[in-house]
Image (tube, rainbow, N blue to C red; front, side):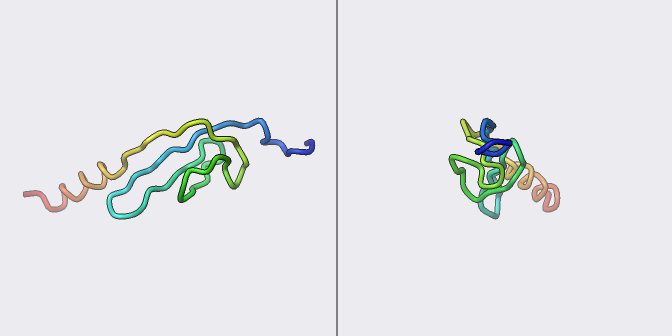
Amino acid sequence: MGIFGKNHNKTGYWTQHAHLFKGDIYECSVCHNPAKKPYKNCPKCNARMKRSKYDPQWIDELEMLDAIFCD
C-alpha cells in the first residue's frame, strides 16, 4: 500500500448540493462523503479536489412545495 495509502493519487471534485431551507452540502465524487465546506482534500479518502459542480436541489424542493400549496 505504500507510505501514502491507496488513495494518494486520487483526484475528484466536490458536488455542491444547494437546499432551500438548510445549508449547502458538499459531496466527494470519490467516496461520496458529505462535508459542510469544500476542503482541498477529502477528509475521509484524502482525494485531492480539482473542481466543483453545482447541484441546485432547492429547485426540486421549491417545486414540491408549489405542488403541495398549488394556487
